[in-house]
Amino acid sequence: MKKGFVCLCLMLCFITVSAQVKLSFNPVSGAKYEFHMEMVHNVKQNFMGQEMPMETEMSGIYLMEIKNKTSQEIHAQITYQGFTLLVSSPMMNFKYNSKKTIENPSEMDKIFEKMFSAMIGKSFTVIFAPDGSVKSVSGMDAIIDNMLGAISDYGQMGAQLGAQMSQQFSDESMKNMFAQSFNFYPDNAVNVGDSWNTEFTMPMNDMNFGVKTKNTLKKISSNIATIDVAGDINMDIEEGKFTGTQTGTMSVDITTGLPVTSDISQNMKGEIKAQGMNIQMEMITQTKTSIKEIK
Image (cartoon, rainbow, N blue to C red; front, side, top):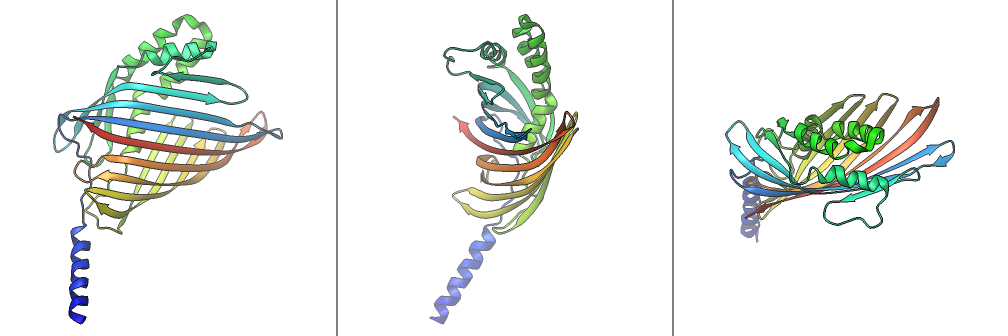
C-alpha cells in the first residue's frame, strides 16, 4: 500500500510539472480563421422616476488571414463577412442583418442597411505582437468612406449617424476591440493553478475605460487551456463615473494561443449628470467569441 501510494504521488507530481505551458499569440502563417463575436448590452436607467431600459445586440463574423509572421509581429488581414445589430428602447428601435432582409423596415432600418452593407466584404489590417497587444490597425478609413458614401443622400440625419460611425469604426476603435480580445497572455510559462494579471485601458474622446484582470489557469486537456477571468472595471465619462466587475472563462488552443471560445460578463453601476439631474444607471454586457481555422 505504501509503495503504491508513493508511486501515485510521484505520478501526480509529474502530471503537475508537465502541465506547464507558455501561451502567446501564435497563429499559423498563411492560415485562415473565422472569428465570431456576439455581444448583448443591457442598460437600466432611472430618469425622473421612470425606468428607461435599452438593449443592444451585436454580432460580427470576420475572416482573419495571417499574411506575414515574424518573431516580432504578426500581420493579419481582417475581412467583414457578416454583421447584425439590434437596438431596442422606448425611444428608438432599429435593426440590421447582413444575412437576411428585414421585413417591413423602418426608415432608420433602411439607413443602417445601406451603411452596414457597404462594409461587408471589405478588409483592413491588424498588426499583432506575440504578447497579444495590437501594434497598429490600418484600412478602416476607406471602409468608413464607403459607409458614409452609402448614406450621403440622407442629409443631416445621415451626417449625424456618419459622425458616430466614424468614431465607432475608426482604426483606434478596432485596435481597442482586438486588443481587448487578445489581452490575456502571461509573460512567462505557467502551471495549472497559476494566476497572472493583465490590464487594458481604452481612452476615447470624453471616455476612459479600464479593466484590471486576474487570469487563472484552471486546467489543461486535449491541447486546450481553460482560463478563469476575474477583474475590476472603471469607466469615467465627461459627466459620470462607473465601476464594476468582469468574470468569465476562456478556452485557449495551446499551440496557436487563439481563444477557441470565450464567455465574458461585465456588470457596471454608476450615475451620470444630465439636465442638472443625477441619473442612476446599471450596464450589463455579455460577450462571447469563438475562433476556428478554415481549411
